[in-house]
Length: 135
Image (cartoon, rainbow, N blue to C red; front, top):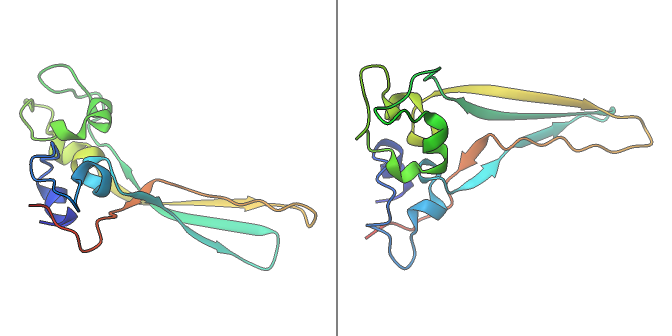
């Protein structure tokens, strides 16, 4: 499977990795991939950056071990839903596990004619597996 499989099945523990595919390094759903931003600038002294950002939707809810989405940001291989409880569904609420909500984030930076400023954003992610697949 390619990284698309891991978007809906975040079993990122490396069981299916092979010589040309490492899910944890190549797939955003597994904590890999590359940050991406779209940069546009005008001929004036403004630069605008727009990127899709994901926001966790769990609020103060935690799993059965009292872990929030922050835990899954650091441990995406735990995204299987094993510790979900009545108020917490990791795969629906946490961006690291394919949940959360997507929103466009735009940043505009103004500069003087003497200075050059580059605005960047890294909230979006692109999978880097190319045509590689797991075993």
